[in-house]
Length: 118
Image (cartoon, rainbow, N blue to C red; front, side):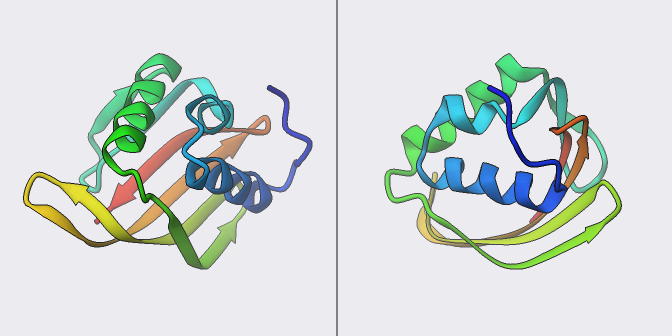
């Protein structure tokens, strides 16, 4: 799927809209085929679009009321940082409010790196 936006902020926020719709195909379409997910310490945790699709499939299937609010967005060049808040995040100990800082790198109108800080 091609995305019309060449603005990295708009691309990331459009991806969040697809995420909030819990649409695996649409959400994954914003990522490059060789994109990586990285944890706060800098270790790569997920590599490639197939693995990324699996991550989103798991998140969406275990979080039926998933909806991320994005109160803050900052862009520096090809990097976009968002503050993400999910009120009803489901985890092994139940449900709670979760907050993350997510750092995205956008190249050639695709996200090629997402680093998650929680």
